[in-house]
Length: 159
Image 1: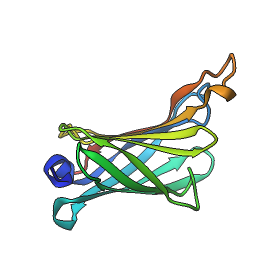
Image 2: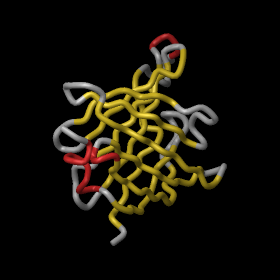
Image 3: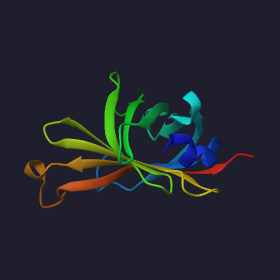
Image 4: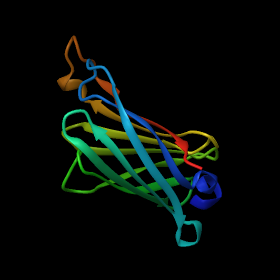
């Protein structure tokens, strides 16, 4: 299977909104977002370039490059975002299902993890969700261990 055979139908430009929050007890703040999804290298590599607006820090951008890594639909990705984890890029691993959903994971230190889900399965909506995973040893009564949504981007094709 190639990236192109699964996500090529979602290639193109997308616009919409992005919900962002820092802590799981904060409400998601909806602001404008956009993205361009493309497939290259003969269908074996995909890229998602995206822009979003942080409620206090303004315009931000990110890039996710992903490809098949061996068998069993394993995916490897390189991810960088101007706000989330600058200045270093993160290597993420995960999988691609046949419908076009890419699920990625990155341990960024001391049990804290990012989970990224790019859903290219629909023809009219492209979504990108990012979860921060709280390790059990830092959970509190107010904030439980496990993943919570930090970003939830929902985009529609721009023509």
